[in-house]
Length: 450
Image 1 (tube, helix red, strand yellow):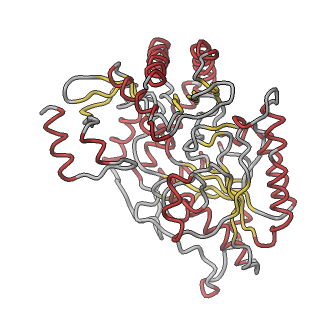
Image 2: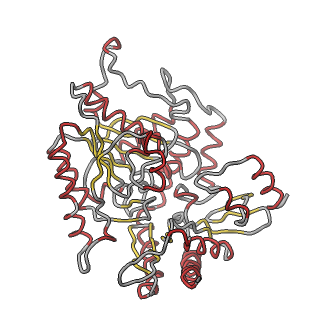
Image 3: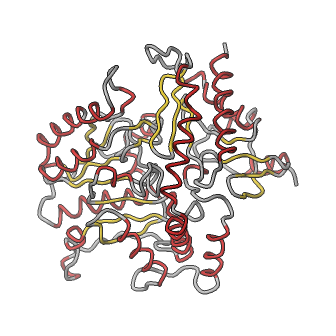
C-alpha cells in the first residue's frame, strides 16, 4: 500500500474537516501509517515532525508507551458503560485529580465527548442556573472579538471568528461582543499589561449596562488560538473576575486549547490567580489519544440543580460516551506523566529555547510580530512591517509555508498568515531547530511570491 493508492480511496468516500476539498486536486493529501514520538510517518516512508501536536492535542508524543499501557490495561476490564445511574473507578479517580489540580472552588465534573460539547454544557448550565434561581431574563452571553469556542451552534454563537461563524448567523443565538485584549493591537511602546488593563474597560461598561440580562462571559484565557494565536496579559483575567463578581455574572474559562501546560502553567487561569465559575477542558486532557471533555463547576452551581425530581430542576443533558472508561484511563496516564516527569519546569526550558531560536526573525521586513506564551509561539507575516499591513488572505501566503514544511519533513499548518508552533512537550533541541529553521525558510518563500 502506498500514499497514492490510499488518497484515491480516501477522496472517493471522505469529506475532511476544515478543508476546501477541491484543493486536493493539486494539494497532496498525506495518509499516515504510524506515529512515534514527535514524528508521523506516511505510507511512502516519509517522516514529519508534528509541530502542531495534531490540532493541539498531543502532549507527550505519538504511541507513548505509558499511555498505551494504561489504555490496554483498562481495555481488558471495561471499555465503556452508561454514566447515568452507573459509575466506574477511572472516571471517579480522574474527577478527583481534576478537582485537586484545577483552581480552587471547582468541585464538580460533568463529562462530554469534545471541546464544543463542553462549551455547550457550560452555556446551558449557566442559563439554567439563573433560571432555577428565578432570573430567566439572564439569557445573554458576552464574548470577545476574535474569539473561538467550537463548531456546534451554541459554541459557534459565543465565538467571533467571522470565517467560521458568519454563514451560520441565521441559526445562532445573539451574543454581546466586547473588544479583545489582543496585544497585537497595542500602541507603540505600550506594554502587554497596560494594553490588557485598558481593554477591560469596554467589558466593564457592557456588564454595568446589561448585567441583569447577562448569564456569563466566556473567554479563552491568555491565547485566542483559532483567532490567529493572538495573546494578552493575565491582568485582563484578574480584572474580569472582579467585574463578573461585582455584576453577578458567571465567568466561563475555555481552557480547551490552552490547558495542560500550554501557556507555561498547568492551567492559564492560574497565572491570573483566579477561579472561573466554569472551566472547559479537552484536547490535551487525554494526551491526544481519545475524545474526552469535561466542564468543571462549583458547588454553588451544582446545588442549584439539586432538588426533588418533580421540581424539574435537574440538568437533563447527556452524551452517549460521557465519561468513557478508556478516555479516562488515557487522561489519568497523561496526568501521571505531568506528575512524574516535572513537565511544567521542563517546558520552561523548552519555551526559552524556542524564544531564542526565533530571535533572528525580529528584524525580518515581513514579520509584524513574534509572540509567545509558554509552549505556544506565533509569527505574524505582514506585507509591511512598520504599518503591520496584512497580505490579502486570498493570496494564501501561509499555504506556501505549509508546503515548504512538508518538503522538509515538518508539519506546520499556519492560521492564515500566522505561522505558529505548538509542539509535543517531548520535542528535543535539534527538532526545535529544524521546525524553526523550516518555518523561516518557508516565510522567505511565501513573501517572495509575486
